[in-house]
Length: 563
Image 1: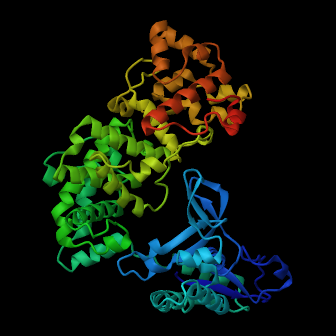
Image 2: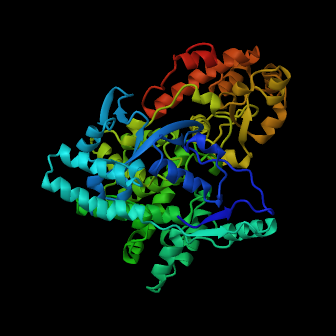
């Protein structure tokens, strides 16, 4: 939890505008506070909403930070007391109606909408944990529901002793400044508390543990990192790797997680009772002997993962959707190289590509995804062996209107769209040269507007459309200078002046999923519809499933028609 910082309120030297915590009864606005929270407001707000407020907790979706959703939180009693379960997996986030559903809401898989359903599923509501009366009433309701079954009573008592009492007795350190603290002192203390110490990372902790066995993990990582950056050969591979720019952003923690994931997966093959996991606690349990036994295989796994991304059209480190997706991808390649070599066939590589694109366009790797990494390595290999489709593939979905909100390369899906175009080896606008990985780098290729921004602004075209990925593609720097801010019909004339025939120009533009006739007539509206349709077709092919809502009300509203 870290420390919190409070300030006694009412002093003459410091005056702050204050507000209540989210979820607190607004009728208490008249009360003048005794203490203000200077540091820890977000932590305390979350704790208050989850553990004390009877209102649903406000949170936001990772892929749309502006959209607020409301959730209730429960503890799975049986998982909490299971010594083989991860306590984090025992925490459930439930929608505001207290029902978990699947199949687009058609099927209820968990109903906690009444106390009886909570008792039935052994799910304890966290927002009563600090109310002894409510907790006791809930316990009695549980016992009565199961007719005071001895096993249930023992399970709840163990849960109360090991979990609930730990929560209610937890002590949080607090730095409390008195009301006579000067403004300058408050600022200085706040700065010191926030920047005075840097927490140890997982890598630093593992480094310290390995050092006890006379192994310098930091020095070892520096050697691997140099190889990833193409600076020099990695001794076990006996070669200098060129164009390893796609591995530049791989960090030491990524490498350790991939290593831990592979070790965990191998152990689960030997002993099916062992869970596959690469969470922080698992990385901290990594043995030096295990690390050394597969380190070289993991290095090659990352190497192969980078080559795989090149074949998916990822021609630059700036086009990598998620560095985090490297973790399961590298572990998958490493295990395959060490054992079954099933990825040598095109059919299986196609399945891996479909999994990859579902992760990208489903935008499933935007936050901590240790559980997903573990699911992926297990389920991808089962899928290749003829099993069910992985959760990452089945869960992924992409909305047609999402294309319009893809405005910058900060979005994984934005990078994914450009990579899909590059995967088809498009031709440069002015030279008609095929854009390979080599030419992409040599020609300083970047992302530019097809209908130039200057032209769009002058003609007052809707920015939401012209600045979206629908109106963008990858072209050479020299080509972009030739295009300038002119209308497409004008720069097509420049293409002709450079000696390109009409047929060649048509082929060039078509290779970028652009209809040449629409550029020749500067028909922006039809161009947006046509290219959005083609991009959605490409995305659907890559994901191996239809794009949702192509004919929905929202899509028709945004585009003027179904696409």
